[in-house]
Length: 260
Image (tube, rainbow, N blue to C red; front, side, top):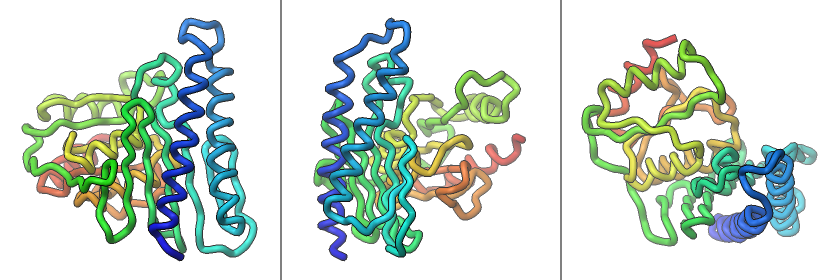
């Protein structure tokens, strides 16, 4: 199947989903008693529209999505992994750091990845073996090779306590890195690694749809993706370390794996 065509369909679907998110965002304020209900509606509406657009082109493909989307019938080697709203807390508060993420597997290998930031009109894309792009311009990772020079991002569990290993990893790296941030969107963090805006991102609390498209974009941007321990990464295991692939990767991995 033509991967350029598959990418084009994914981009179309991502824009459809992004437009729906932006439309719904104007219907509520973050100070309402239950904006979560409206956000759930926005999330579901985005996922439904994305699914319908892709399914209309490839009716035999399988699907996995954050909002309960699961279609595994049939024997197609293709499976779409969809996050219609990555960065929900940001979206609730109208903080403009959220995205639509769409990845496509073939026989378990990621072959197409699209992440769309509707606030900046930034479309990050990748086809396996063909590099990564931002709005059709090639992107690549940074060259930083020391943690003391690095800008890092980390995911932390919601409402966790200070003794959580994720918090302790964050604080440990914070003592050494140039800076460590928490932004609330794994998809955009991965895009930032791929485009050289940041040097590293790690998490131990993500789901497949949070990571699927982004890991391909990082790899195609020249970066490296493993577990925090430096072992082989699986999108089905919530353990991710993504960097620019320099010696920074092993330096950061050594620090992260020492904390349990």
